[in-house]
Amino acid sequence: DVKVTQSSRYLVKRTGEKVFLECVQDMDHENMFWYRQDPGLGLRLIYFSYDVKMKEKGDIPEGYSVSREKKERFSLILESASTNQTSMYLCASTGTTLGTSGRYHEQYFGPGTRLTVT
Amino acid sequence: AQTVTQSQPEMSVQEAETVTLSCTYDTSESDYYLFWYKQPPSRQMILVIRQEAYKQQNATENRFSVNFQKAAKSFSLKISDSQLGDAAMYFCAYRSTDSGWGSGANSKLTFGKGITLSVRP
Image (cartoon, rainbow over all chains, first blue to last red):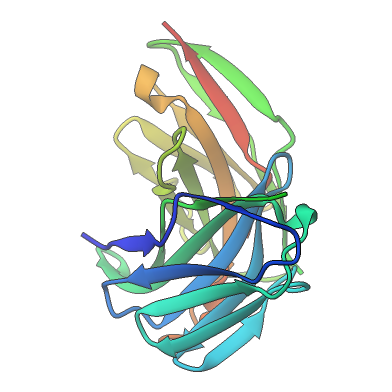
């Protein structure tokens, strides 16, 4: 089974702190993603990466940065946490699945990190 | 840019009954994928069902089936014989078609806002 793990389920940080959220996948997937999930807004893409050291901005990158030094690990960094970054953060990776109708990409999610910034 | 709309924030269904969750989307592309994901309370998001736009046949997975209306850009999820374990938040999602291996841009999903489904015993 594909496993995507995130370093913490719950995290409480103070305003202005630098925060690292770690994500690791064990299936050699090229693509990894960071989303934030807020009530009434669904999932919004922050950043994604399609290879080591490669990154692209998603829909809401402001206030965040990412790092991908190894293929299996994708880190989300909040340089100076603010209260409006209190949210659930979901990591995902995409790999190729061989189905009956051919190959397709399936996105696998981690359990999420609920970050509270006070 | 593509958009996905789930206009109902909450629904409720009696156990063993059938429920349909609605989703509409907007795109200028002719080929793409559509997905329904399930997120149980405090648990991981999992894929329920997927549909390729070029296929006219509606996808089915056991008690889950979709009604895909390409011209209307509608993609609803039908859950038959609802069970208590079906209670969760459900997200509709869109993805552009594959244009190559490892193409990150084409792996991006655009999600709707989600719908919370409760199942009454």
